[in-house]
Length: 332
Image (cartoon, rainbow, N blue to C red; front, side, top):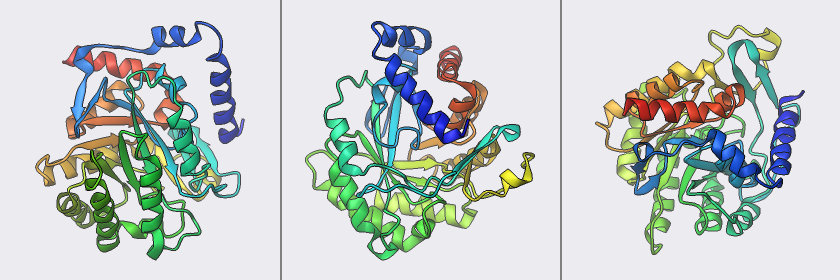
């Protein structure tokens, strides 16, 4: 089945199954691991465990109650843009089964910030799960006006999410990664922080970065995070690199960002570099190629405070969260 169609079939089926009496309790009993040893306090928020669902899976805040039953400690919605947009033309997601990877060029397809906020407003049961809001700009918005899109999303979601993620690192919106350059990035983050600090209670703002940054660019990221005083970094987004892939060359040649197993090593390298370079001055959320409990431990040992799953969750199934949590308890 086409990967995007499969995603909607599975999530739709889960939604239907969740309406059956006792189904949520059953899923929770099978997959959820609860133990005080798993709890983490990071950027002022208390997480019941450090395993989160990365942005991209639940773009429109439709599946939070359902996904919470699989044992996630936090769920990041989005990427959300101010206006609804269809994203790039289909097909736009491809499985590289040999490499345990995905290529996607979704292009921030979502129903808009107001729709996501409306769903979060009437969310019945968070089940103790922290919710993050990953925000971006609309494709038609020129980079010089991008700040207005981030401001709009910040205000729309502020009352309903626990933390924010500024996404300037997706390779699938033309020109977006240019906003990772020092001056435009500082402008976005400083503006959001100014707005944040005027609120009665400021919320953590994180920056999601690409794995393809050079050491010099990572040095700039450390400097910017410390200067703007944002809460931390999510490392990393998908990669545009095609090094070492073994899948069908026709598939490998498809445009888009790669996630999954090929990202394991590079994401860990970025986490370790940021942790050492900053002298652990800010929390890092590790994401990229986590397909096993061992992969998760490696990210945490490299300096991550929390981790997120997406492609590994697709390939390995919901038992991956349970396995990671059990391993963390055993190692504690």
